[in-house]
Length: 233
Image (tube, rainbow, N blue to C red; front, side):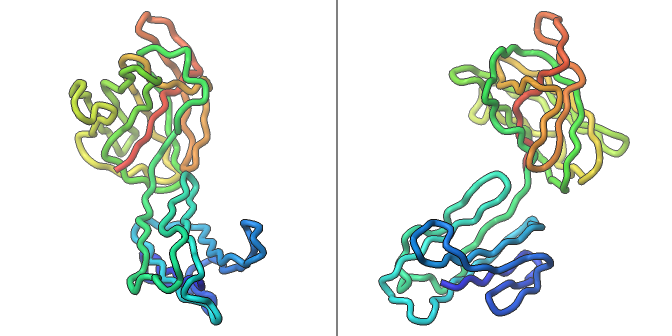
């Protein structure tokens, strides 16, 4: 299958032409089956809807199979798997491109205790935010009870509503944008046993998060505890 991708600004890349800056179209065998795979690489991903159309190559049999996977910095999304060429849809596949600030889960979340985290966040791209998700330690009620994010142009807060349906998430009092290259202060007060990254600075796919001080529920202070969280719309 040949691939045609239309980005959120209606710019197109195909085997024959390219309107997307720095994007590339290549063919190589990436899975070792002695058959070339079509690959489109877009280094500067945009937020919004990408439409992906597939066109059977000359000589392709209707019974041949194809798989379509979209890979980003944080995940692989399979849009089609082992579909017959003869069943390729007339409408494009759609991939909704979003961004979020995600520390990911911690490989070594313990020791863990509730307390107050303070530090800074510096995203490397614009990220729209409405809520904060907290990764809990397995089998616990780890959560965030209060969060504040602020700098000279922003001041937002979020509060926990208790163990309701979506208690891992808390919503800010308004939606906002983390602007690429800007530094934001944060205060996060946790309850139960949230996952912890035991480091004072953590790189993520979308920027850095740092710990300046963590004070646990017993009043003991640390400098290398970062709560495992995700900021997203």
